[in-house]
Length: 150
Length: 284
Ligand SMILES: [Cu+2]
Ligand SMILES: [Cu+2]
Image (cartoon, rainbow over all chains, first blue to last red):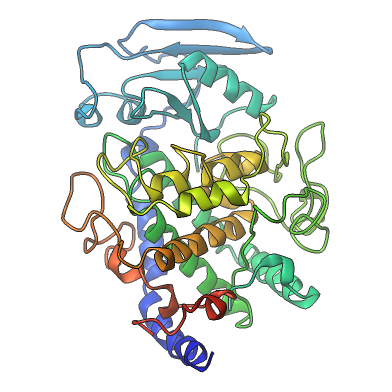
């Protein structure tokens, strides 16, 4: 017990010293916004080129229009460097070229190594296909509109 | 001392809540939400991953919590993060979901939390880092797709795994880290995010202050695992594509390695350390 307390008291000056600069590190991150964030498009379907993959669905679910495309199969395989592909939307980096719109607004999504999908509004739950992911997002949004990240 | 939230006194709960609200008021809370969101979106199975889906999930969140706790202590130096043992405290009507602490579940109509200090109506908790138009905190405790909280037996089955992590070092890996994170196996950490639902189910999960109590318990589980497996350690030890090995720096800090984070007793104690023989470890 004594050793425990001694350890704890010794820890704090050490800890404060180690944590100096953390604010800077966090603040610096905002400046170094990853491409996925920087590339978030203006909302709305007008003027947006569709990704070059085939459209998989375009439907109205619970009053919201959901559209989804998957990537062209030729670009990259599992573990490939598809995220380095140039000229794509920021979303290509994580979605492997796939894209989902809810009422014309991009839903950030990501593909898991097992082929399932995950989206930013439901980020700890995986979906087997894009349409299920889009419907899950509509459920989670519960009528709210997607907005670009701040 | 980081304590089990079920054992906090009324004053300790109040001090924690007031410090969190003060951080928010001073504009220093939301950068934690933003950082977390950015890492959630950039950590991928087929690219670099630091905070999630990879071996540095545990040291990254340990340091993230330390940064947050340091901010709280700058406001009130009696405050330390409490942890929520979700294998024990599973009642959505009881602590930590009480009006004097984190508030309760959201209302049926829109998931809005309307009780406790973080209710939008109280004027002290507006969600600003968000992916949709709603600016109120949301929860639906236990309502998210029939998910239930993990049991102690499930937790013990994960603590029993002796390998920290292994190739392919992502969401399909076997091993302790990935089963604790929840992409495989019984699913512990991810499932708790889903159970709370609302903001906790999103990449902006730190918008719900229970994020800190949840991750504090996950952090404690890492320490518990280390004690159970003294001959196991962080893996990978050598530089490995797309992940952070033992002695490589983690973003965003750049000067913090997993090795720096292995011994929690350098920074704080858990209330169970004394009874389990941890504490006063090599770094203390
Ligand atoms: Cu996280
Ligand atoms: Cu988490």
